Length: 374
Image 1 (spheres, helix red, strand yellow):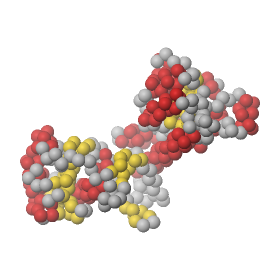
Image 2 (image 1 turned 90 degrees about the vertical axis):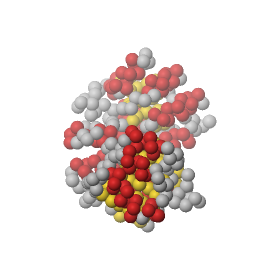
Image 3 (image 1 turned 135 degrees about the vertical axis):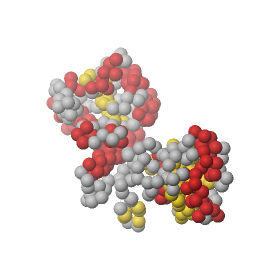
Image 4 (image 1 turned 60 degrees about the horizontal axis):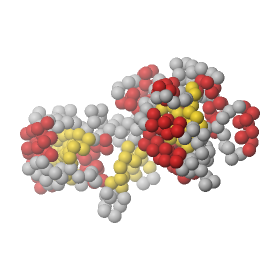
């Protein structure tokens, strides 16, 4: 096939080592020359496979605490050369640069670092520079190079090796994923810096990058398609752990988020009951079970088939009250062990537990025709 590119040389530099050895093993078995950096190269070598360090290729040592290692013409020339052009082939030969047909890169764990509470210089140090440069270079040159940014694609690449190389369609898909990956990464960095510099609510631009998490059965109405997308630093109803019940629907997510926002407007224990985006009852007090009952009693008819959110742990007493009424979803930061078992007896009840990192978002962003309200 004319659009198939055989892989002869691969550049691998990954923070997430998931599946690395399996991939390196398959590439080595296919006769691919491996070039790598730092800890990635060490793991490949320890597994008994031949690998060249980037510093061997560039003739320049890693420097400035690893800030500079792949930013070199011997690396980027090999990634960016358009081998369809005779002029580029001649220049590579004159410069003694070998081309890459595969780049496997995932970036410094910036989002994970910031999510752990890290700030200041320690967080800044996790902003990857060389990684995004390689990813973008390979994605631009997808006519000649396959770029892998997600270990989930390793198996597809291994299968491509059996077919003689990567197809143009596969490289195009990978290039789109790669640019989305770097866009999301830069968006996370920009959002962090806005918070760090105290300009989040007055920033001249807001960067939003989303990746599909799952398809939903349908949208707000049954004839519509829908999906859930996540940002790099998502938390809240979108990333809550579902302990029981049917798959969340579009309307479940909308109501659960509305209930969550209402409940977390309060410092004291609070419960909000929402149905079709309208509040049936909201109450606050000292004991969460009593608070739930007060919220329910506000409009017990409308609360039937609603969504419940609590800003406090759901106790056994609250759970016993909840199961007496048909409820679509209950979401809370935690559930007592007994409470969880009581709620699970209602097979259709969707039980969502918030991640420990959940806090109310600093910005509330709503879509309107042609723009966003912030």
